[in-house]
Length: 554
Image 1 (cartoon, one colour):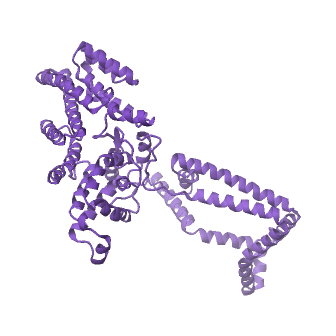
Image 2 (image 1 turned 90 degrees about the vertical axis):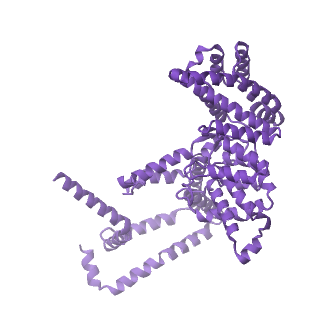
């Protein structure tokens, strides 16, 4: 019985909600009809006459004060709405109406309307959203001492944010330390050094550790932060390789003796891979590109399971520098897989290779006359795919936005990833004749296929809404963060701006021309109520007077 009563109440409530949602016009006219029928008992005509006499006795100063106060209040609301929109990216009034008023009026929250049949799809999309909003280590990050610090010395600006450097400190503690470090004095010192915020204190601790023992992680810290040139950094990394290789071989023999030895071997593996990767990057910076490619290939063969360092992206950049496009295609065939996470490097390099086949002869005028060939269509589709994955990259490749030094961490599909990609790959696009021209002619066509990118994508998941917030944390304050999709001003900001301007204009005109504005107000009101008076006259002429008399006696 209780369940039946509850079901009946729910049905009744849904019927009432439906009636108010779709039949509000009927309710409105019914109320107007009742008011008109009861106009004599309610003495509506006398009350309106009293109000009219009161309004006629008011001076123009009252109307000036009224419109001025309205303008002031709407202006304050406008200022608050604009501040709230700039800070939180949404309208305060819209947020309150959706969060609080909509449930009271019978609206259904989208988040709570999903039933059990769609729970699996929701969980998949949530997991994808979390993975897309994850901050990743930049595989092409620069050297702090030899590159980032030199930029600071020249410009006086800090290229790295505190948030970015804090993430790097966490990475160093994860990769370069283990629970057994306290058993070895040099490693114990370095364990504290990675937690130190002051760069000079870190460097001093690294020197102190080297006085005790040949410590690979101490050499890494000095190569990253103390070396002022790439050549000095390479020299220190070679010393780190010698020390790290010995530790790796010793721990490899003992890794099966217990969990402690296994953790130490895992740490030594991370250290060795990091050193070899940075040595390859030093060779690439110093112009020894073929040597760098060989080192990267050997490293990927020796440690095929360590994909977290994304060494294949370093390899792709070096192969593009050598213009070894067949080798680039072979790497893409392995890593541009549907089951592997994408990146701007993967998507835009694939687009570059397909654009290279047609870009030298591509002409937008000729293409509009004869249509796109199959190869041109493939190139355009590849560009659209890349732009959908990261829509911020084309503006940097086309030099519509100025580049800055890339951060040490990036957000996939965000502005930080676009900067990191364009910083190293702009030269490769310029080297391919006509590639940038093809990109310029076709990249904006992507947005016609995805009119609502935050809700539904074309080839990828919907564009994550977290990119702007994360990029503002990763990128320095002097850089204007690229935002996609562009946020339009909420309706209530435009409404309050128009209301403020309109009431301010009325206040000014009423103060300057009180008689003229009075005539205008009367004419406006008479025009506004003319249709209603016309309808009421027609109703009174059609219906018999006896009916009206009986209704007024109720």
